[in-house]
Structure formats: structure tokens, C-alpha cells
Image (cartoon, rainbow, N blue to C red):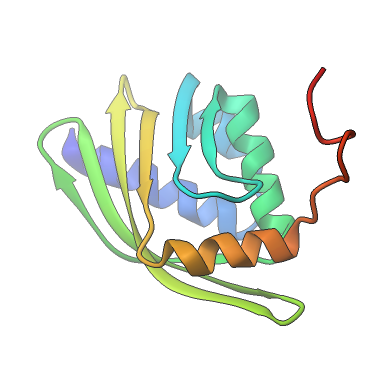
Length: 142
């Protein structure tokens, strides 16, 4: 089981890097996936459901982020832990950091994800540069 879980996470990275988000949604993610990304920037927070995570992935692609898998391993029967390099440039803002992600795989699909950031300040600055917030009051929910 753990080998197939590793292959599932590797497949997600391969699909992301070639822009095949539909395969990720259809074959990799559980429909009710939760994906948590720490930070204080426009893309941080918890994403609920495959549609939200795919929308988040689309925004990562739009910002120019590239992701390279550095190391991946099983942690018990249902968990995968990996280290990846996230890097990109948006104007003068540059991002190049190694981060860690913890995946819980249930019934052959990624169900729950927690990302751990090595340099949160730099990530926050990068995404604030890549995504300007709408002026108040348009950015506030009613």
C-alpha cells in the first residue's frame, strides 16, 4: 500500500508540472480533500474539496511557481511525507525555498494535506507581490 501511496503523490507532482490539473482532480484527490497552506498571504489557508484545491493549483501556476520533488517517503501505511523545492519570480519578488508536505491517503486518494513552510516571511512577500488585493471595500465580504 505505501508504494502505491508514494506513486500517487509522485503522479500529482508530474501532473502539476505539466499543467494536467484535470487528472489530479479525477485520479489523485479525494472529492472532500482538505489542503492547508500556512501563511498570511492571498493563497494561504485551508482549501476544502477538490475544486478549491484545483483552483489553488491554478493560481500557483499563474504566479509562475515551479515545484520540484526532492525526497519522498512513506510514513506508516496511510501517510506520505515529502520535501519539495518551490521557486519562482513575480516582478522583483523571488521565491526559492525547500518545504515539507504531509499527505494522508485514504482509499487510494489524497484526503488530507498539511504544508510546512521553511521561510514563511519570504513566501508571504512573494504571494503578496504576485497577487494584489482589491481595495477596501471590494475585498471585504458582505
